[in-house]
Each structure stands twice: as C-alpha cells, then as structure tokens.
Length: 306
Image 1 (tube, rainbow, N blue to C red):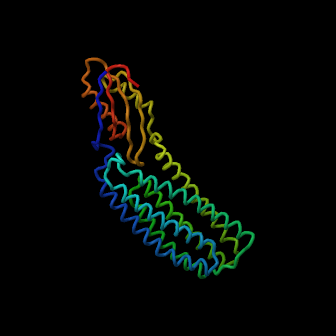
Image 2 (spheres, one colour):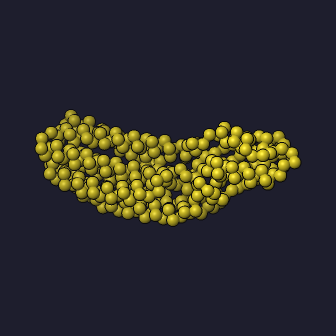
C-alpha cells in the first residue's frame, strides 16, 4: 500500500489570509482603544448610578465593568494568536480568540441573570431615583459606547473575538439608551418602575446575542464541522471531479477560528494514476470549491489500513 501526504499552506483565491498580521494588529488597536474608553467612563457611571439610585445606570456600569475585563481578555487573545506554532501548540494559538469569545458570551449570560434578579427586586421594592443626574450620566455613557462600538464594528467582521467584544459594547450602548429613556420618563412622570422595566428589556436583547455567540464559539471549540460545509457533498464532489479518485473516507473537518478551516481525508486512487497529480488536484478542488486552504490528504492505492 502506498501513502502520500499533503500538508497545504498555500493561500488560494477566495479565502486568503495573507493580510492576517495587519488585520490582527488593527484589531488589537481597536480593542485596546475601546477598553480604555470603557474602563475610563465606568467609574463615572458607577458613581452616578449609586448617587441617583438608578438600576439602569448600575446595570450599565456593571456591563462596563465586565466589558473592560472582556475587552482586556480579547486584547490578550489577539496577542496570543500572534505567537508562532511550537511543539506544544502545533497549530499555533489561534484558538485563543475563540476561547475569549466563548468566555465573553458566558459572562454576558451571567450578567443578564443578575440584572433580571435585581429588576424583580426593584419591582417589589421601588427606589427613589434622581432623574436629572441619571440622564446626564446616561448621555455621557451613550457617547462613549457609540465610539467604542464603532471602533469594534468597523474592524474584522468575521472574527469571533471581535464579535464577542462588540456584543459586550452593544449591551452597554443599549443600556445607555434604556437609561436615557428611563430618566426622561422619571423626570416627566415620576413613574419609577420604568427603570427596572427597561433594564429587563435590554437584558433580554443582550441575552439573544450572547447565546448565539456562545453556540458559535462553542461549536468551534468542540471541533464541530464548519458551518456551511457538507462532508457528504465534499466526498461526492471529489469522486466526480478528480480523475483517478475511487473512494474518499476518514474525512474530518473542523475550524481553528471562524475564518480558518482545516481538513484531513484519505483518498484511494486507481492503479496506474500519478499520485502526485491526484494529490494536487484534490487540494486545488478543496481550495477553490470549498475555500479550504489547509488540508492533509493521504493517498492510498489499496484498501485502507484503518
């Protein structure tokens, strides 16, 4: 039985990573700037929330506290992902970004639970709120969050680490909008329940994004098949379009990050066929048809030993 292995590192058309170092550095700068903005205003919002008695402000300050930590985690993940592969991490440290996104999603889900609990308490025990102070602090928070969200949202769209950071800041932005609305209602009507009511509304909006992010990043960490890839379709495509291939088996696909897919497979070829040509044709088909740049292919001329 003859075996031939290919370990592709070419960056073909349709799915290039040649710009990755520059994009990663840009992502780092954006996350760091957003972290400084968030952490800087968090102190003012904590003080404003305590003095005004507003749960919406306190919830938003809580968002900002976790966001500052989450953005710091995202920044560290980007730094780690720049490290080259070594004997302990043969694929490199790209998964650090996905791990950071997963942790960020879980912290947001936990924070939503705390906000909902506090809101229920406020419904039963209303607290006097200083609407004027609450309004000015919330407006300042909104401006800071809009700038931070713009920094993150204008970065790399497909990067889960950036998505995780942006979800956190979006939660802050929505929290600031809710706090402004609650402050206006309190100033003009004196109706205090609007504060916890809007806090619940914002929390549920954040929960949806956080769960989606947790599912996507968790799927990658569990080495699930990349979204949009059909294993059976790939097998049939190689059999029908690569001359000399008689069988495709032991096909596995997973993702290092949301934009980096990896695949391994065995291909049995007909006798008398040049294995190097078949190998090149398989990798070319995977790259251009399915955007898989990193594939390890084992060529077999007899029944598979496994």
